Length: 215
Image (cartoon, rainbow, N blue to C red):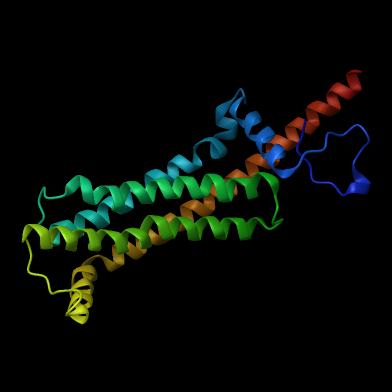
């Protein structure tokens, strides 16, 4: 059964009506049981791909600040959880639960709007979020383990801001490139998801038409 949007006056008498939640569950079950996974790979793998892209960007950013503050092995795992693992989980979660439903249900009826939303979410979690969390985490561990002389954030906030700017300057161009890459990747993959939903519904409609002719 194809998932179609119709006005009340256009709905056939034998059609199965679904609310948005049921329609989403129904369609994702179709995707999970689709025989050829390569035909539906954007819907199956995009959240994971975006999560992996976030991990790479976050590791680069976190490694930079840890290196500048000479942390070595101090607090490695503790700094990677908020600055790398959490952004990746948030990327996957938000795309799966806030972008995919709009792709499947076509609630906005504006593919570019959905792609832009997906791109902004990816840019935020993959780059902007680590650029905030990674230095905060590194500053905390550098203060705790005395690996770098840091000004007090409560007594000298301007000095801390200057240090952040100084440490961040060498990687600003790579970070901008990572931000653009992540945003464009998310928009591209979301576009592929939209096309995949269209292709699935088209194939289901064709199958229904064939079955009706055979009857």
